[in-house]
Image 1: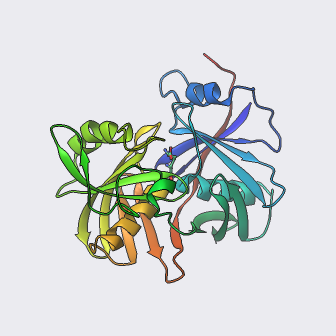
Image 2: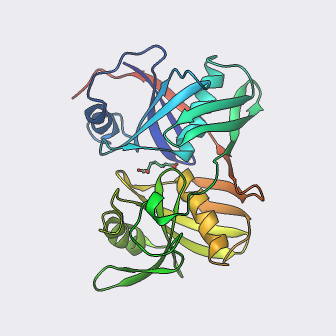
Length: 279
Ligand SMILES: N[C@@H](CCC[C@H](N)C(=O)O)C(=O)O
């Protein structure tokens, strides 16, 4: 199986061109195998670039544990780069079908290749039942999340996939590696959740680390950055236009007057290979 390794702000996935490749039936197992950083290719998950009847391509996204997510913000920028650079579509405005609907993307070229992508990520979903979470509020803003020994103040937002945002004094390993896994599987999140930890640098600048549902800590999460930008506005901590610093790079976020969230960031192709596994 031919694959392409790509990353967006360090959030790295194995991409397979399903216009050409035939996949095994059990995609969840394939995602687990290729993601393994010791015995596989090594990635945060698997992304399939598939034909679509309604858009230029369809994206399907699987986490490193094999679970399928509705959306992937860093992934969709890389899908757009792949679709353009590999000649699947040749216009600098693309439509990509996802589990969260069809999204519109504008490509920025350096030479003949895509380097940055601006994505209209759509409107944030704020109704508790649709996020989904059992926490009160539509959405829950500064809601109490009881972890037993510790209580967090969290804000929940869906960008097609669920996010739980905690603003902290200092983003550190304790938040991400100790609290993150507890938040991910907390009983108030029936579909589990992605957990973001945010330090406010200034109203126009946030620092973020993430514990992702199904993949653990990653160097960046595009949907998480969108959800955090929305949470910053909802809690009065930040402006509608913010730069978010992540371990793997920066993302520019704007929660526009139209209520849609726009995300701009890099998309990078690292190498191509042939998967002969499982090993
Ligand atoms: N890293 C992604 C999100 C990937 C899916 C997520 N772990 C989930 O299960 O919802 C992004 O850039 O948005």
